[in-house]
Image (cartoon, rainbow, N blue to C red; front, side, top):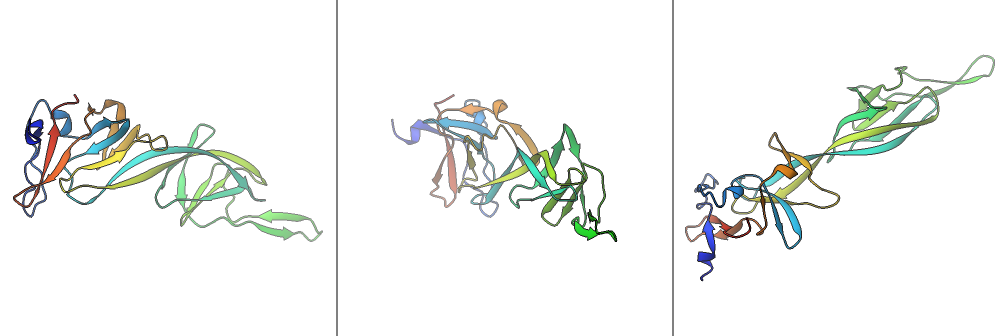
Length: 220
């Protein structure tokens, strides 16, 4: 059997100037029409078709990291927010802390007239107060030196370039399990995605100057 007969055409050529892929209705290959999970040779991927060809495609995952902040003499601890993993929320003792933009808290050593040393701050908010100053997040965990345990939930952005057929894929790994993720404002759960075992869509150049996506008939 020829190579062409081993595959069925899922998408027509990209519309000239529009960069669109026309998805043909096929019951056997319906799993390929939307976001799906592909497994082949032990490699798992999340596949997103129907995107702008050769464009940067993003997905967002929520990651949780437990950390212990070191507090200064005024009870303030801090950490720097990553530009690729912005903070979604902070949790301490089971409660979500409110993050407010503001000025970085100060902690100034002072001395009384009798020689006693004390420390003053420009922000005397209660324990659990959070201030975001530029890309630094300050958390008040008390009134003096110590440690403060928090869970940091971050929105990690992953990017992949779509191929000529407008199909993007993201490899599933131990460090990026993609258990839950968001794409274009829609939330997805990996376990509920349609699953294929034939490697996913195949993209080939078209004689008309566009590109065609093929869906293998096996693997369902």
